[in-house]
Length: 145
Image 1: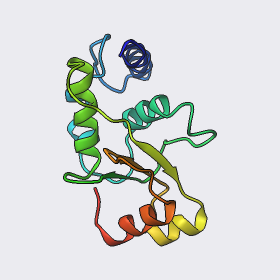
Image 2: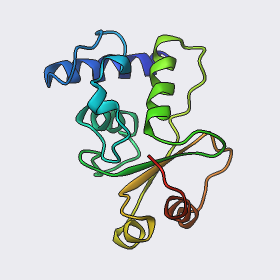
Image 3: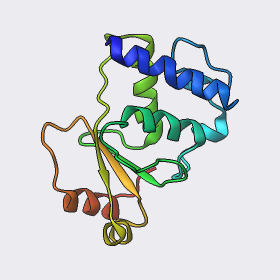
Image 4: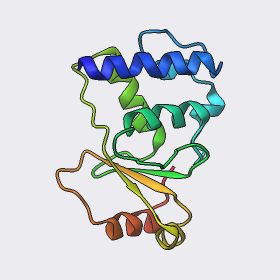
């Protein structure tokens, strides 16, 4: 929990430096992100990209979320980046609120084409690791925001 709070402080300071939005310096406050950024636009905003680059810093290797189309898949229930980022924000203000950063799947050119143009996907609240082919199929068959 302490590591997540430190990460959130770093992300917030970066966002302030880039003048993305006015964010309380101790938490990632998703409510302060502009309505345009919170829209279900499939491309990530600058704020969302910076946040995900930090969360997946150790697993994304040289992948950068900036200007990427990312699918968010919750195995059961809600889908989409708005739900994912709301979960992150609630957890940042209440450590007892359940949160799962998920597993990052980065697609190659063929997988990107087959998925409908997604560069990557984040699968969360899954007990098992999915084969990347299954993630591609889910994105292809389900319209995600």
